[in-house]
Image 1 (cartoon, rainbow, N blue to C red):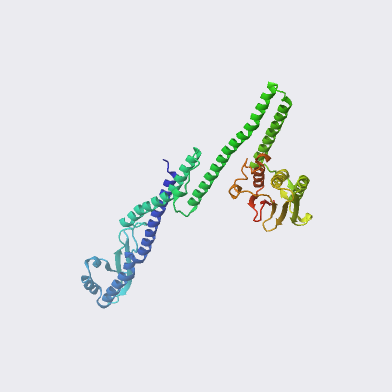
Image 2: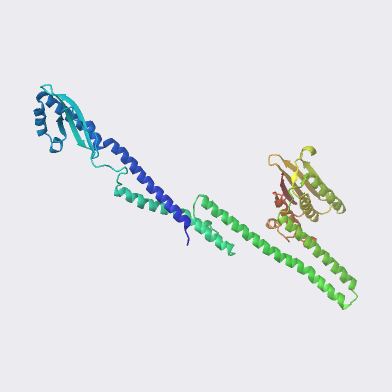
Length: 429
């Protein structure tokens, strides 16, 4: 298995850790050596003291006094203290690392001498001091362990994500990663949760597709079976040829309507809403309401429209497809008409929320409502109410897809006093 990211992180942190330890040691050594170097000790402490002692002996007793003083010095310092005439040059630095400090002294007979103290600066030091083996082991092993743990901590969940994507690509839509990531609280854990949401959404879409194909095949099979039966009766010549032709015509119209609804559902589901079309939502709602009133009069159903929106010249326009929005409102309105009876009222309300920059449309009826268990699924394709023969079960599904294509939302709920309410929210812009 290729673990390129693991090795990159491992070596990067290992090298960084090792460099930091060596750099700290180097700075510490350079600072300490600058303060306590042998040359500094000799030049600041030993050399002045030796010159002072030797000068006092020369002033009082001459060269013999210096000789007596040197007899009492350690063997390593006897040759360092010399007495010469001032005419002899004194080298303060040479290639062998020699250092010298000198002072002119007058003897008791008036002779001027040069008293010199020479010392060796020691072997030349390297610019980089030698690293203690303990610190070297700490930099190598400690850095290696720390970098390996950090690299494993970062790459292990990434490998699990890669395996999850591999399983998802092979068609395993039930794969989830939250449990395997554990109790992490970082960006990788967020990525794992996003992966689970994506996998869940894909599973829902695939199941919805399969269910839609099943429902479409069922819806197509029924009218086709009736058409075949009518064709068979017409061929037998039983005298019901005209009735068979009428049945074939009705079933063909039903098939045409079904295909049209499916095409509308596909356009809405794929978000085919033109963003170049700007229209006034209140005008579309008023037009749909007028058409519904014309149909409602025959059933003695009242439709009341209320508006809480700015004046016409101040109303913000919506962008999208006016035809899709019209069909959305019309499908919801027809659903309310279908389940309303004579004497009942359908209330249509529209209001504008300037803070949220959105329109809210509520269509309420006084019908029997929908069982609470069926509300969540009523926007799915081919879901019908009790009046199964009144439609194909695609109206609310088309409405839901069209609203989502415009960036809005649609919700449904039973009214406390009886009836049903559908709430549609359209954002402006």
